[in-house]
Image (cartoon, rainbow, N blue to C red; front, side):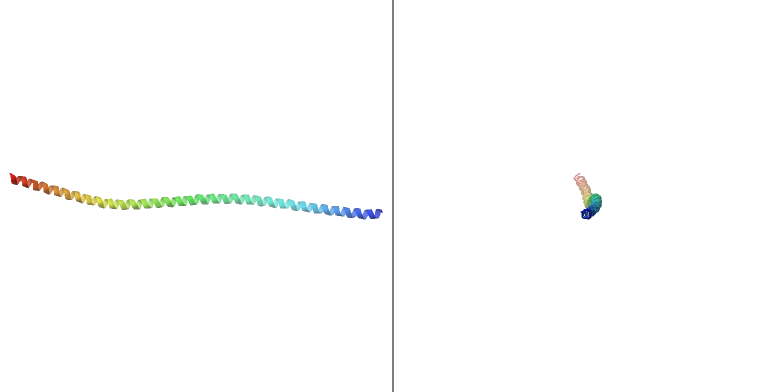
Length: 122
């Protein structure tokens, strides 16, 4: 009976060793998988931070570009309107000056006529 027990014990010992080896391999694979998962998590977090930074930089750049364009356009339009209004006011001022000169000439002429009429009455 001892010869029957021995092979059974050997078989059980072999199965035990096989299971132990399989367990060690499984634990190694689990540890490796956990390490890979942790590395992926770190890379994902790093990539998320980088994406957020890039988005903030993009927003700031676009805000500056849009604000610069709006300010530049406003300045350009303001200067254009100012030049146009200056030209129109210049024309109006020239006409007013012309009218004032005519009025002065008319006043002089009226004064002269008035003097002549006075001198003729005397």
